[in-house]
Length: 127
Length: 462
Image 1 (cartoon, rainbow over the protein chains, first blue to last red):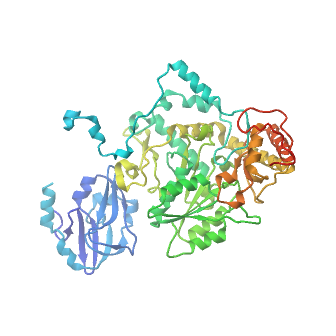
Image 2 (image 1 turned 60 degrees about the horizontal axis):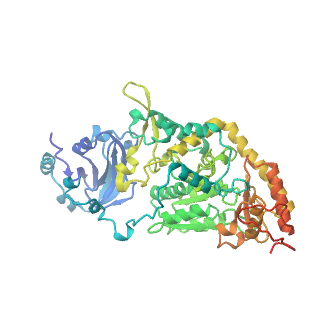
Image 3 (image 1 turned 45 degrees about the horizontal axis):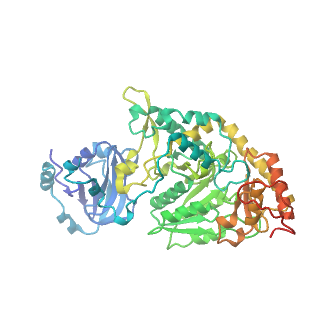
């Protein structure tokens, strides 16, 4: 199963979708599968500024807790409020309704440092 | 084991511990036969003064504990096993913790109660840390009217990046001895140093009732959380934290059927609003259903705890005072809400009696504000009077100057309290003994024990 081709990825299994000067961030299906049933997602409030590869939140499943790393720097415009009541969206729709944060991109060049879909596929295939 | 690890001696397993911290010889006495040892320990215990008319409170309160408490605690199912990590074989334990959490939630008027902490001071410190995490701020204000031991524990937990500041008390007038609201407002007004939490006690250390709703409003207006330190029996007659906007309640559960026990073990109560459920440390037990649809109790929201969250956990605490929490639950269930109200009301009635008796004997109250069952009185040379009273069989509360040596307003103060176990005879005895001491009259009968003074005191206390 291949990952969406319109996204870029981090080694820690976050994805980012750029749309003009904003970008949406979430975690991949692989990450959600590894974590198991997600019960809680701790996300930053609007206005927080994120640094690339810095921790921006926490995702919690029944058995584990994992940091979320920002794929790119930016200012948080919105966090997905639906995840408060329905954290399972991250498992059922990791690239769609399970999105996590919407940010204003401050440095588009950072995308070059991320993995493309093929490189990410290789990463998860290698285990 | 050593072979499998590739080591040659057990000592090598401890190499990471600095030499200076390693235990040296324990210097224990020779072993004794059990009978002999029991007799020695018995003799040691015999030195406890259980003959005194006690008016000592100051954070630990004597109440009558129904025999059901001890009887149930001694059952093997409760007394030894307590860690309910395997719900399949711990339903009884988990249910008892769930009931403890439910009872306390009702008492404090808040949504979430954790399974318990070591004692009130530790619970208060955890509450302070919760407020820092939840607000992402690093400055906490604590009223000087919170128990000095609790403030000491807070200072131990703070330091480093976290800042603890004390809010002064009103010095004169009707509000003397309570938290100075104007000073609190000034401390909260520093926008460069926003406050995470404000801590006040109800009743406070001096026994006085604080303007909790007003303190809460000031805290919230500044974006800080409001932490209330409570005494559980008083909650039967006082407004609970949930009613006046507290975000977190912390306190000492000892008064709920647990004997004073010379300082412990005690029971740390910690409760919060639902919004803070992910920040509260300690075990949470929830009600769920198993695969067969049967009711089942289980530890819930485990990912908060240290064994899973490790360095990101809210606290290093992942245990609870199970036996003490059980004692509190049995006490509350046996006494019931009406019984608890009677306990609190009787204590208050005795306190009014004590106030009048002491004032007539020459020890007036220091403060004017309302109290429940504890208050401070002034006597000349309080430490000496306290010793003399001990010689006459009266434990006249706490010498305030010893609890707060740096506070000039506490000089000559005695903090006294009554509960439902205090009798009118004991109050009369206290007042008579005090009259004698202040009037310079010698004791009627010389008592053996600490503080006995065989010389007659002429012309007042010297």
